[in-house]
Length: 168
Image (cartoon, rainbow, N blue to C red; front, side):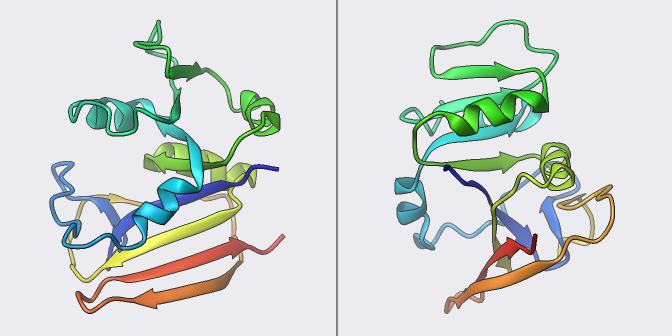
């Protein structure tokens, strides 16, 4: 069965965006394992806001199916984009053949997936920067969620990647 993997960058103080929605603080000086990660997925789940931001860069994920969770976009802009209106649709998508699914964001969608117990793996690239404010990664989580550390890797840049799986 396909896995849903939350893979994202986070500041050391827990933010996924700066106070003005910026993510210019994310390191891009080396690959950080992303090439291998991208080989393991063929589908992306993202919220409307994350989708609109990513499309400003001419869809960097043209070879993967993108599911956008939204109630405000009326029509999919291309054949590679599918609109999802309800979390109830996720089970059907998981049953489809394919590789793993990248839960790209944002924070509200991440919360919905965490609270529904649908995330199979969390991969966080913790950047050695304190933003002071911005959008926190985890908000409105409905109780404690225990995680098991599966892997950690540090880089000479100070970035640390952590891989967790939920304890079920």
